[in-house]
Length: 301
Image (spheres, rainbow, N blue to C red):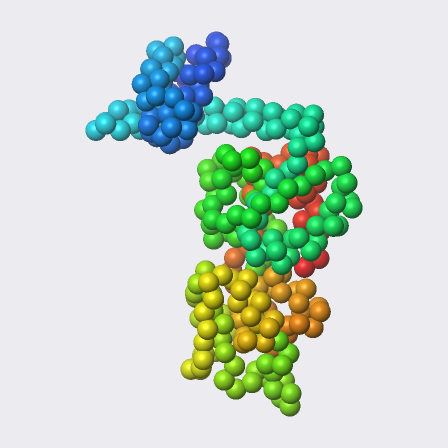
């Protein structure tokens, strides 16, 4: 927590005149990493250049921004206050610059999405977006894990079991609902239940999916044949092919259910996670990002 005393000391200084932009840029990177070395690598400068820029900034402001102990640097209260302001200011500048470039050059919005969701849910619905917003180009990028916006990504769709980077904004899209799915021929034609000895399909990326579903459903999984696939979409495709029964999130299998390629003998239930739309900063009303968000939220499953 930044003390009131530090706020009182630094506020008049900041209101007097702006420090050099280059020094602020060096400071922001060093503060974000709490490392002069990593800041130097990011900005393609030397460690000494970062150190001199920070020293010059401290001299101009008349207050220490970093504490230096055991060959490491740590933000002081004043440093945290300035970093919060600098990060927000650079974020606003970055966003404005991207919007201007996009307007001038018709640059597309770049949306990163987890590969299986992208392939099985988003792409089949994309014609509706291009029809609704023909003048708003959208480029899709497959990606997973924590969303990083420093490589040209404007927005990202991720499950909320991934960390959200500091400063990023997160807006909920939909809850994850899962259940066992299989081809119709895997059901007993007389009872409508799963046939005996049907193969359970697993995936290395979600190894606990079956156990977690069974615990929520209050059932025990009997011994039986099992097969593991490297990727999630492979286990779902194997289920479509009639090779066994897989745990399928509803939005990843809803089109196959509608087409009669899959059935869900036990229905679907929430697994406690949700998909969110992540952006490097809050979405502004009327922006291209806001239009995309509204379209995503308006999609039927």
